[in-house]
Amino acid sequence: MGAVSEAIVREYFELHGFLVRQQRKYIAQTRREDEEVDFFVLNPRARPDNSALPFVLTPLELPRITRAVVVVKGWHTETFSPAVMTHAPEIFRFVEPKVFQHAAKTFGGDGSLTKILVAPALPQDEQARERSITFLREKGIDAVIPFRTMLAELVNQIETNRNYQKSDLLQIIRILKNYDFFKSPQLELFKTPRKPRRRTDKPQEQQASS
Image 1 (tube, rainbow, N blue to C red):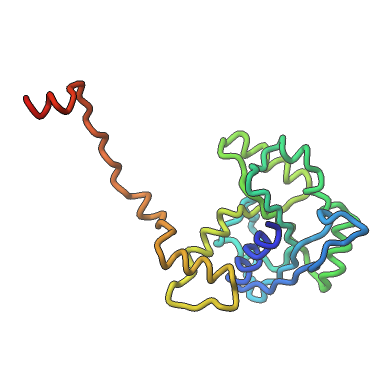
Image 2 (image 1 turned 90 degrees about the horizontal axis):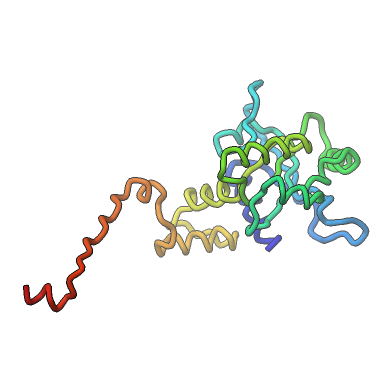
């Protein structure tokens, strides 16, 4: 699952013009895998400004990011609630000073690095969501991108008349999209709700004879 999750993240950033460098293609034996940064991303066409980035990023904010370290947590059965994060401290090891400084040195160059966490989902409840965001900020995370955002963008951008043979992930999305396995969010949003069927206490035989 880790490789699939990382493939989604890579394709998403490359789709938006980022240069993506993977930190490693192996699992180190001398340290925990969760201590490592998964990707370094560089936006050669960045348009940074002085306004604050929203914590939960959408594709609209990506042009404002110049350089970032990205950690991927593909726990697709979990919501990142404060309770879950409290019992999983390994999530935040990459922002610890020693680990982050090593990552920044590996990246090279000057300039600040945005610390991005790619996570399954934040809570739907507004108060629980705000608690999760506060918790993540206090740990040193700059921004979060939900997997749902990434997948929705990939599905939206893939064209069925193109052959993505150099990417298994994009090719699978293209095939599924070609056979209508993805429903348009716009169509679903404005779809007329089906009227409930009228019920009657009479058996069908009595209805037919009446």
